[in-house]
Image 1 (cartoon, one colour):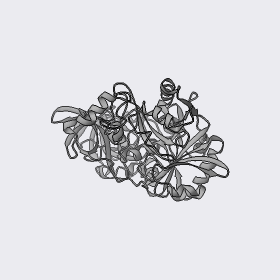
Image 2 (spheres, each protein chain N blue to C red; image 1 turned 120 degrees about the horizontal axis):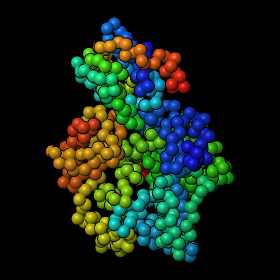
Image 3 (cartoon, rainbow over the protein chains, first blue to last red; image 1 turned 90 degrees about the horizontal axis):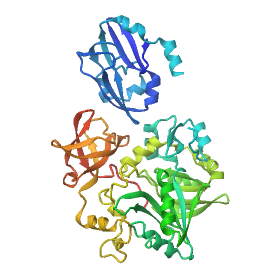
Image 4 (cartoon, rainbow over the protein chains, first blue to last red; image 1 turned 30 degrees about the horizontal axis):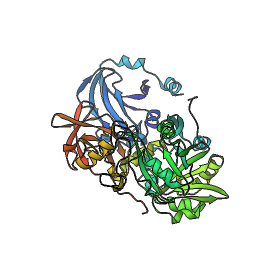
Length: 119
Length: 373
């Protein structure tokens, strides 16, 4: 797993990268009540806001962690946003990306670095 | 958070796993480990304990010794019948300004020989100055700084509080009285800010933690943070001062005319005589150009404060409070719209992140209140 400073995790799965948010982020957000996911087959650039996540507290944007194409989104989350709190690193993945340049992942944090970030 | 004040329950909050945040100059719990959703639902199902010690408690003591003098004096600042408030009773009131705007909303209790006012934390310094300026000839204005204020809310609040102070069970909604807890006087009113039955209890700061612990020792009682306090009051259709009402909103615009008794309206025995009376009395008869309404967004996306509202492509108002309503299991908002769009069932659009989303004007409260009348 790789991690961003915005508390996203990335897991390489064959030729796609699966993206979600970390346990830490889901705890900080509180109970998630709404998720707006992007359309599949969307080209994105690192830093583009692609997901809106609303918790009982506030709305947050989740940005694309790397350049590429979103090839699949987890539509089930629209009806069960609370899954983000129950299983943020498993069932509650947000989207899958085809990444043009996999070396972009090298710039991201590994688990140790991420754990250090969140203290 | 060094400049922030702490309430007498600070250590108890931290020990209970609260996440503390700055709020109106105090460090207060926004949520505990259970989280906002569970805390909200627990309050609706059993009983929730809230620390509202940040709110201002102020005594208005008539220098003449006659309560009527304090009541008549306070009526010069609020469009509410205070002379009609009997001993042992409490009533919702509003401080208005000369333009008819709302300076604060508050509770007023008649405690026999004086009045007890409970005001918003963010307004309390201004409220006390306002009282001093206008009423100090007639009343001693005594801010209470050595008492905590707790709220116990929910369908089991009466069972819970009666375990400590049995007299609480006999009270009706908006009764206010002093009861004894192990030789200590606690000031109890059957009221709250959740739409549930419940009480607010003023206790001396020295025993506040003990009192709270005695309530929390009951299985049915859990501590509840500011997050759930906000979603509970929103579902109940209750205003948050500073968001839903302020100096730019009048009582009629805010749909709070129920708080203005007939005796203070045109033709009443004590008509007018409060700041902004011209405008408020006129709006009571003719209506206001805009109204506070309940709003139910379609779909799951909450429409939060600041969301602009449209009818066709015309801007007709905006949202002042919005969140997810855990009990009604959908997003819920309130806001202001022009009078012609204020009717229940009116379909509008709210602009969320650049997109227009459908939202319907709806009656409040969003779920029936459970007061013990």
